[in-house]
Every structure is written in structure tokens, then in C-alpha cells.
Length: 285
Image (cartoon, rainbow, N blue to C red; front, side):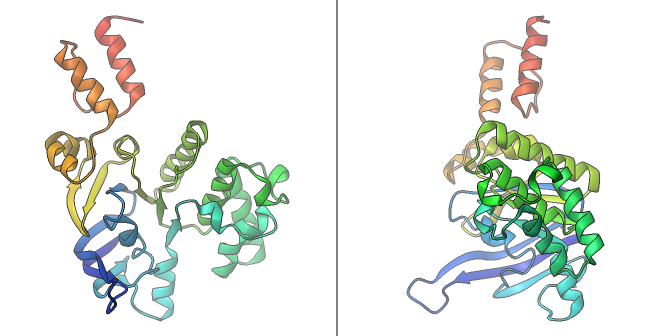
């Protein structure tokens, strides 16, 4: 089971003086169960790419298929395939529209034709999953919640649709560190419990290397690199700098400490592990 993209191209405002090619002959496959980070500078094409994954955009050339079903079709099979890919946009709280948290989360399952009992079950489970107590929040207006809570409502609305693939476009944008950590904790728990694929679009090198096992680096509408994040940062540092990206701060600090003689293993991807390795190297408890 996978999303397969073959040789897609996409141009905004074709035939106008403002024509801009956003994707240029892109091919990639994303398997169910993967966590894939998609990184690139603003305008690189990363958001355009992920909007093809569930048919929000249709390529000018090439093909996108989900579990072997082309998204170009207009039949029931194509519609069902598109619904297997859930999308959480950047600042998803801007898309909240219902009067209550319950109604907002219930919209997706109802749109998929779930029976009322199943809708209620999905809403309750999704709210519990993202840490929103049903009795406390279900009948509350989503517009009276904090930014982090609104982000959770948006994620719950997608989770309630039971997608096989979840696309998150900058899910931590605008959140304070505590809310950001909470959101990612829920995302990783969802991946672990349901085995769904996570496609994470991010500007943060730290998020990419901390959470993903695979990373796509997009530049000028093409895939520049596709592989393990730590390997890409290690082997292609100069090229990443040239296209407006840099390695994570944890990599830089670990490299600096190694130059000063501290014995630290390669492949440290987060600050918690780095701190543990520093303590171990120093003999601290």
C-alpha cells in the first residue's frame, strides 16, 4: 500500500505573465507506515507536492495513485482513494467553521457517509486521542480555545476520518514550545497506534531529523535528496546551505564537541539524546 507519484508537473497560472512552474517531473513513492519529512525553502514546491497526494491539485502531466487507484478518476474508487489521505494545513485553526468542537470534528466522518453511531464513536475517540476531554470540550465553541487546542481540534477532525496517510503542513507553526511538543507527541502516538503514514512538511531541520526516518529535500520543484535525514545532513551539508537550508543545531553542537575531544557517537538526532551522551562522556550521573 502506497502513494505513488510518477513524473508529475504543475504550473501555477498557466498561460499568464505570472506563470510559474512549481513541480518539474517529480516521482516518489510513500509507503503506509512511513514517517517522511518534506523540507525546502519557501517557494520550493513542497506544499504544492503534498497537495497532490489527495487530489486537491491535479498535475498538468504525470499521475498520482493511492493504493493503486489513480486520483484522476471521477468514479467511486477514486473518491475513496482520495479520502484515504488526510490533510492538515498550516494554521488549520483558520479552517475551523462549526459552532462546536463536536460538530467540527464530526464534519469529516459525516461527509464520508458514516452512520450517526459511528460518527459519534469516531469523534469521541479522536478527541480522546488528541487529549481533549469530551465532556469539557465537545459543546464548547472552538473559537474560544487556545491556539494549541484549536490545532488539536483540526487534527482530531482528520483523525476521525480514519485516514491511512496523514499529511501535516507545518503543524507546529505559530505554537509555543509546550504546545508544539504536545502536538508532536499526539502525532507520533497516532503513527504508533494505527500504523499510518505521516508526511510532515516543515521548515524546521530539528523536526525533520527528530521525527522522520526519511526526508525529501525539495528545491525549484524537484526532489534534490531522498534518504535518511542524518545521512543527508552529514553528506550534503554544503549543497543544503546553497539551497537555503542548514543542518540542525544539535548536529552542529555535537560536531563542535567532538572537535574539542569529546567522544560522542554519530547519528544523534535530538537534544535529549545529546545531553545523555554528554553526561556519559563526562562520567556524570
